[in-house]
Length: 424
Image (tube, rainbow, N blue to C red; front, side, top):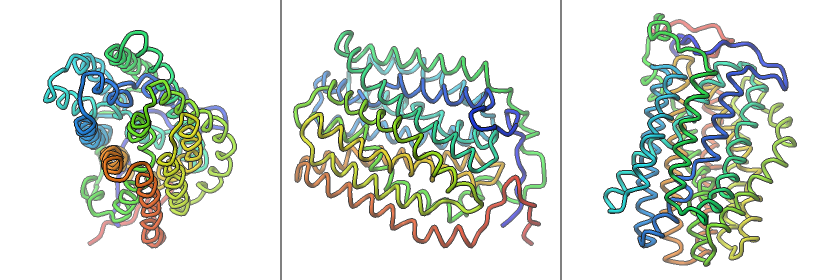
């Protein structure tokens, strides 16, 4: 494996003691929370389009277009985080969202709806690779980083609960269009937080200085570990994405309202709040070592498949809430394990790119989940949706088997390692 050169991080890198993270870490966590808490555009898009009179098939197509944009956006922001810097990328993406979301709210024609969904998808999850790279820059201790990512995942789910509860309430009072304006205002707030609390980005020359023998993109394309992780994650995250893509379709098919979906997300967040403090110490110990935690990834995929498979058998708000809560342990384990693996296998000058490529697996899961749910509801109902979700989760676990062997044979060069000489 050829030597890589570490980019100058955009933030200072002190070691965080337990319970005392650097201000930039808190800024990243709060940005994650706010962006998700007011991220109404995607989870309520299906209700918005139904309100405009579109069919279930058209709604599924628009959601799939949103997912395509999501996938593209992960690659763009991951690349930009390495090339332009963490702060600059995050500020630009959030300001662009603040401008584009109100325009999407006014779209009526289907082509305009799809165009708006594509742009909104590109920007919707833009913070993910930037935050991943920023956390890896600041926290080099494996166990501490796992703890930070645990709370980061908690912020995502608490935000999702706020999205569901507040979105349902606001939609009832002001209409679905108003949700896009609230989402835009929150994105503008995230840009201000990033501008204020993240350190200035290093010049491009400082980030690329050094005798790198392989470009970051070349390293990623040739890294079999990354692509096995990506494939396993597509399967596992298709199950996870069902919580906010397939779930509204399943609940609407049973005649449940947007408020019911909001309560299911409250149940999800409640389970996350209760289980994160319990699971974090155990996950921190498991991640505190040189080997990527592939076994945890497989466990998370299985738990996600079983938990979200139960949603296909539900037909009441309580039943859906129980199914979503049952999937939470797998969700926590899967995301922390995946972030641990990405950080441990990524070259230091390609952290954003690796995180962005991995983020496309969630985007692809977002594309697959509603299409799969729509096909199952059309062909066989909730029972077929349950079986399909369980099968996809098991596939994710099986794909972890070759990844175990590959990660054990190819140790990663980290900040604590001595760079290997370039291959001749």
